[in-house]
Length: 333
Image 1: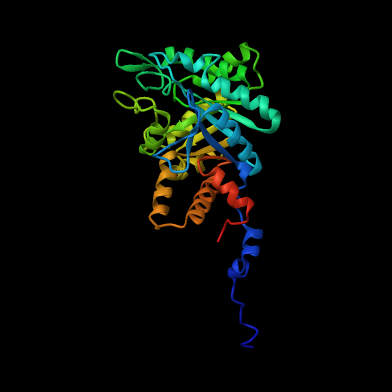
Image 2: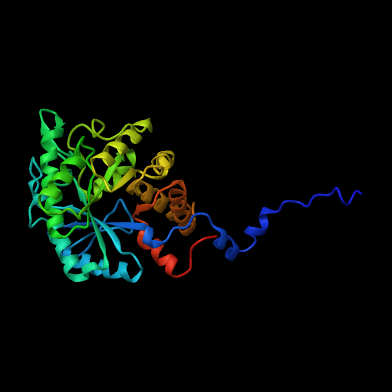
């Protein structure tokens, strides 16, 4: 009678016993095809230039950019997002929409060389191109939202004309997606998609990027247009507005400190990207250099946490490293 009343011990550990079983039943998997690699292309360079604030990252010349793309393709990475660093800046960022601008030339070269092998996303903003470093046209002491829309619409069309597959407005201007969608459609680029930085927070984690792209504001800050880190309802409102205006993909930026926001926005009816930003990258790199973390395991865990929270796409400076480790079978505990 006693034996009949015994119940077996429930043993979830059976499915954790070996790496092969763990991999088989894993609920979340990050493949290199889920990743977008950010690349900086700088006007006037002859060789690639190390970015001191981001160990292992570079500013590329046009020729070095083609070499880098070849390496990425060999690793199975086909998605990139381009950030341009011009030689010439002015108050209105006119070089951002110059047909011979650095991004426009880079896109054309990449498309000529690699045709349909890659997907090119291009950042649509003014901060790298303006003398003041803000993401729009300055009137008085603040960014003029509606004047800025005219500029970013011109940038988006110039990128599409060069061959960009997806334009990505990052300035957090009200009505940006609508302005870009209308301009693209009017110019005949109905197939060019929009990935909106719909929930871009005013974060301290952008510091290394601003050094990399020479885009720090010369006065004030960006809290008047980027989102308050204390809010998540606002992120939902912003995302819904961008979807209504025509965004094909929405984004949360940064990623790891905003996993709750990623989870909320993952329920919306368009793909969700999360930007694993420069500060997140540099913190991990520095901790690993100091011997505090195992780099492969740290990156593996971080990217899986972002995917587990609900991101469909991850933009990360670790994409190349992750793809190499993935190809060599070096990932996972």
